[in-house]
Every structure is written in C-alpha cells, then in structure tokens.
Image 1 (spheres, protein in one colour):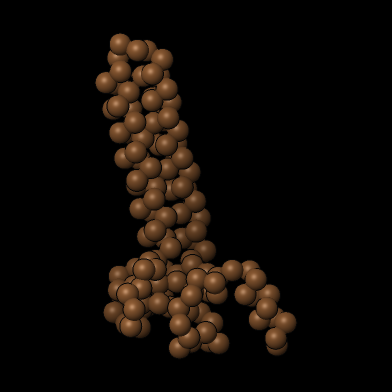
Image 2 (cartoon, helix red, strand yellow; image 1 turned 180 degrees about the horizontal axis):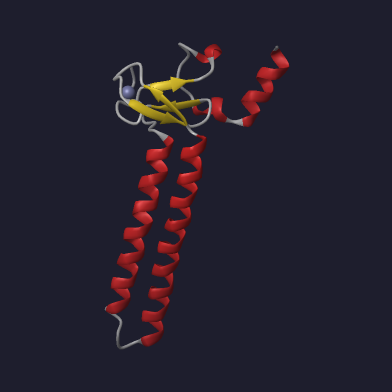
Amino acid sequence: MAQLKYSNKINKIRSFALILIFGGILLMYVGLLFKQKEWVMIIFFILGLLAIFLSLIVYLWIGTLSLRAIPIICPSCEKPTKMLGRVDACMHCKQPLTLDQDLEGKEFDEKYNKRSYAKSKEQNT
Ligand SMILES: [Zn+2]
C-alpha cells in the first residue's frame, strides 16, 4: 500500500495553530533586533500579535470542531479517536476511517468529504 500522506484533521489544524503561535513569538523576537528602527520593530510586533491572535481563533475553532467530531474506537489500533466529516484518518495509526458504508473498502480519498460528492451520491440513488 502506498504511504498515506493524509493525517487526522483535528491533529492537522492543531499543529497549524501551534506553528502560528511559534511564528508570532519569532516575529516579535525579530522585532527586538530592530530596536534602533522603531517603525520596523512595531511592524514586527503587530505581525506577531496578529499571528498569535489568529492561532487563538484557530484553537477556538478546533474546540467547536471537536464537539461536532464523532468519537470512535479505531478498529486498527483500538485507541479512541475523533473523526470529522465522511472520511478521516485515525489520530494514532493514521488508519483511514469512514462513516459511510458505501465507501468501505474503497481507496481513501479526501474528495468524499466534499459537498459535490454528497450531491452526486444523492442523484445516483
Ligand atoms: Zn488507529
């Protein structure tokens, strides 16, 4: 089987928020190096604050997403995981998971989460 480059959505968003926080701190740190040029420092500080602020929004967003996510026990590694949408991957072993019985055994594809797929499925039945 080909290496699955897909990972659990909640994990993916969470690491994105983490990168934003580190990016924001880094930007403010770089700003400190420009103490002589006040306007440069201020721009870096504002950008850093924006990145941190954005990551807070992303964290809040993860919170609401987690509430909507369906907790299941992964059939592969038997650990509890959460899945978003029609198809997702296990947080621990990256086993592709689906809630749709029609998709069972099919090759994993993110297109099954798109609205267009749900629509085409409706038309076929
Ligand atoms: Zn698993």
